Image (cartoon, rainbow, N blue to C red; front, top):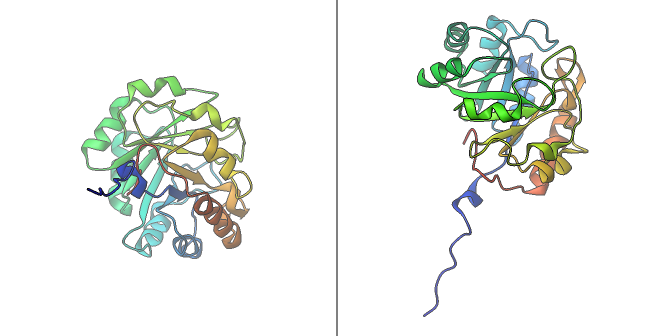
Length: 231
């Protein structure tokens, strides 16, 4: 009797999540959201050229379509401050991009936020430190000398493959439309995060570069090993 072939895995239905980070204007947000992406990032780190204050962030979040996830990026801020900002702005998720203790990530998860914890190849918290955290996902990248992220530094993406156990992982650091397929093959993440690689200048996105980046990911049709981060 003929049988229907079952899919190899339920994970076949997941798209690779794409987050465009460092959005600073409503125009850039709308251009990003016109593409096949799942999330945009708003940076609340004052030393970053992509910094936005709460009022600006709130105005950006208001124009996002209902399916788009707004992620706030914080560096070494108290968990209570992160939570207050998230609630004030209307964030759906937060990215902890400094040396935040595991307890802070846990408190924010308990408050109902999705938490991504950044781990780094070349500084603390290192990849091996994933065992101390239980976030919704990890973000893995290579830290720069001056700033913790958004440095356009390419690195050996293969170091991230399978490095955070069974937790979904977002890959970042030096990605652009020319190298993202190579990075995806090497690291096999659940999602990719891009910022400087789709900019015309620090803090302003280039619509054509964003489109080329998204198209490069979608053409490869990567299948997330551990399912989606934002879906």
